[in-house]
Length: 180
Image (cartoon, rainbow, N blue to C red; front, side, top):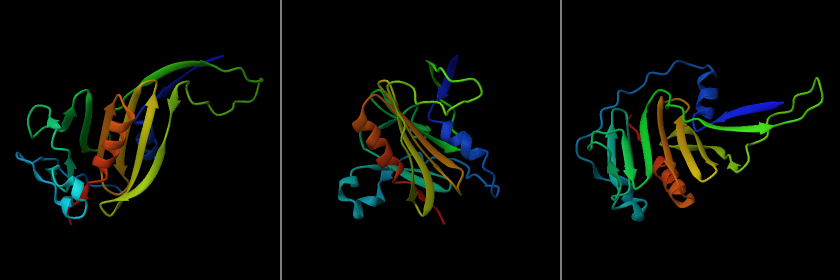
């Protein structure tokens, strides 16, 4: 039997969206026109040169060499071929399709194996006083990162070609702070 697995950075988000719970009111994104210095430099000195991006209800910081695609009001920030995107609601799905042949006895269906050349990492952290579901997935040579918050309808997702930038994207996600 041939099975096609569709995996991507939004797979976890889709599962979470169906989990129910109290309805969430999303903050309205309106990024600041001019990013300011990252205030986390007081606690993490290596972030002193990073820039803060402001939206209604939350902020996050990016390294100073990252640039907003389409100006500082953009929801996409880039560094070379790497990018992060932020917003409210559910992030757009990124589909990665691979076909895998699985032979199973009639009547039994085991869980699907991870696709070849893939590494799936999902974990939970507290960021900005809220629980965030995070991931760093690799499919062949591409990395997909992300964070969604359980009680706040905010997401940040990223794509890159190397593990060190994937780790940097997770570090960017960890700078999110929510307004009271």
